[in-house]
Amino acid sequence: MGKLRLQIRRGVNREVRRGIERAVAHLSSVFDLRHTIAVVVVPASVLGGPNGEHAIGAWDERRKRIWLAGKPPSPKDFDMPEGPLSNKEWVWTLREILCHELAHYEQWRDGREYSEEEADARAAAVDVALETEPPKTED
Ligand SMILES: [Zn+2]
Image 1 (cartoon, rainbow, N blue to C red):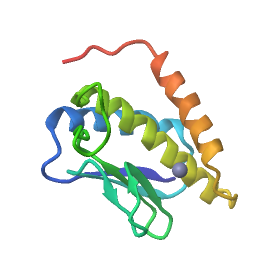
Image 2 (image 1 turned 180 degrees about the vertical axis):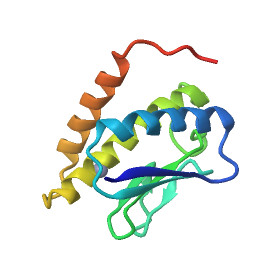
Image 3 (image 1 turned 135 degrees about the vertical axis):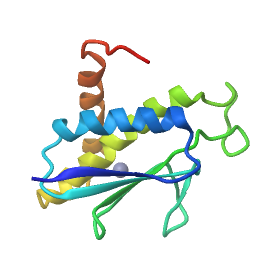
């Protein structure tokens, strides 16, 4: 039996932290985890990947680790005419990205080729399922 082992680095906002904790707790039972997967949330709005890409999430099969950018991007980083995202909006984004990366884990786990389209579809399906759950009392 696998599990998600969450590591939130210092500097990640408290609201984002709480949201990710909740998402990880949910998703642990949604995905069939046969490995222990570390979910590492860093206090940055983009990840500097090995190829210099500006990703928000990444699946690292060698270390069985998912990286997430824990800070909402600022309009300086991207072309964002609507202004900066709130922490809450960022949690929604990260949750969907976490689903996407977990879908890549499933592809790896099952020895299939990585597919972005399939990962997006799987993430959207899981996200819809989460949205339709009875609402939890917010603190
Ligand atoms: Zn992907």
